[in-house]
Image 1 (tube, rainbow, N blue to C red):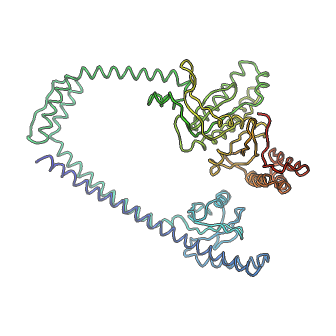
Image 2 (tube, rainbow, N blue to C red):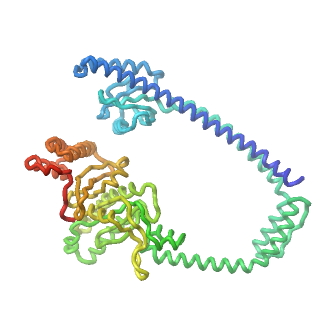
Image 3 (cartoon, rainbow, N blue to C red):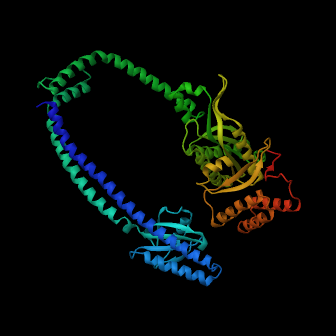
Length: 552
């Protein structure tokens, strides 16, 4: 039998397996279709309910009943009855949540566990029409919602997750069983056919094993069949003869390759303490590319220890060096864990950048996460300082985002892989502002635009740093806000917009609310004081809200 017929015999069971793959594809199409229909039903109910709510509100507006609580409550009761009419199962539930995360309308009984309150409140920030997953009374639910501002509601149409995906689960079980049976049958057939077809090749395999174990190329195989397998055996014998002649050359090439690998490993070991690992990898991939500069958009971070001169004067030199090394170890590990590159140490300061030599899609966000983690990491470092009876460190971190020139800069005797440009200077200035504004971290407006959807941000001021005439907005950020901080930051940002519009009296009122939530908050006190000063002594007519800074 020819090798072609043998191949056909092997392909047949594989075709059966391909049919199973087609079944899998059909499964995905079916489940996607069912899921889409279910989601569309939720969306339809949400749309119908939203139209009804809008119509009820419009009736209140048209009849000027919006200021009559009894009429508003009557409208809300009517909405609740309408919502109950949309419910089609015992497990379906329609809720309305106010801005405080409290349920103000429900079509059925419910209970909220303490740990579920925050999760329920977080749904308020989800866009209308999003499919959301959450827990209510310990049960996983799937839902879709929309906000309705006049009632201060966020309406959710929800269903038990198990009920929502019940048809999908059934299809999954059936498909898995079919696929398992098909795979087992195909595997058995494949083993039988392969064992039969490869039987003539055992002689070739045995000869190869003997050659490998003995490193002798004198072994040959018998040519038993006048077919493709026979020609393979004959070709194998020819190949062994050629390998025997080439063996000495191969050993020579292998020896040279080992020497080259050892040389590369030695270079890496020497320079990895001074040069980032990404940079070393890029050099070995393309050495010529490292000799030219490149304009690139990335994030630059500066951090500095405040009042370091006073700290150094109060410590012995060996204790100071030990503390600095521990501090740098903590900060450098954080920066590198977020794909950052340490550019240089400037005394007690650190300069780092994110986005070179290797670009990542989230370099801007990683730089902010690194800055936040550095501020948090300092707490653990200071605990150790207190335990050792040494002064604590306080740091300021400034981060900017924009285009810089990156590459090897210097001479053939001393060269640094670094970044330069006006954007770098602004990052350094932002670090200097952290002490003036009493913030651990300040970021630029360009970086804020990149990360505002991922981390909470607070507008601190509109400033023109020393040496610049153009004003920029500066922000601070944190990983997580308490409820009081979240409300205070929201009010502060609104107050800043009023301030920039010269509405100083309104701004003072909001800043005072911030101080009620966060007593002693420096940023709010600073801007409130400035607004009060402008109320007494108004700024010039062409004032644009920018504060001109005269120091670094």
